[in-house]
Length: 201
Image (cartoon, rainbow, N blue to C red; front, side, top):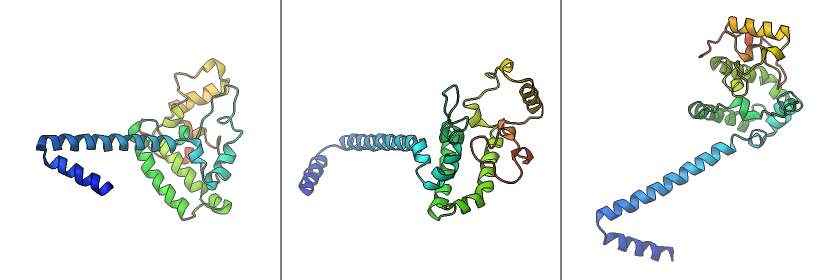
């Protein structure tokens, strides 16, 4: 039946002018293009969910388990950060770059690089350092999606916090220099404040 339908369609198109064929080709191209865009958008949305991020046991049993109960998971304001809030840029260009980098992480998952607790711990510092480097290079862009200097109320901060924030700004520090190990276990080794990475502010 599909062969007959194809033959009938080919016969009908063969009798029409090239302009009509061009219109059909354009409509077909639009249909495929729109379908592709919708599929890509749905795929991007799906890979930007906490459910997707914690779909493998490496993440669920390690960093997600550590995240549970932290200030970013549960707090008095009820504002909750999920994995993509902290690890995926919101802007389209940087988001696409991050998604491409994530394909290498999938390779690590497929090859079993961190598929046991022991392997995960062995690579924890390396993984943390990669995240810290990215955050320092972007002036903690993902932190600033929720937290902004202008939005901070100094009056509600302790005198110590006010002094530390003022000192950090004066020294050109970024959020991750001081605020690390707050959602995940801090790895052994030097922290981000010891890393010299030029921020692109």
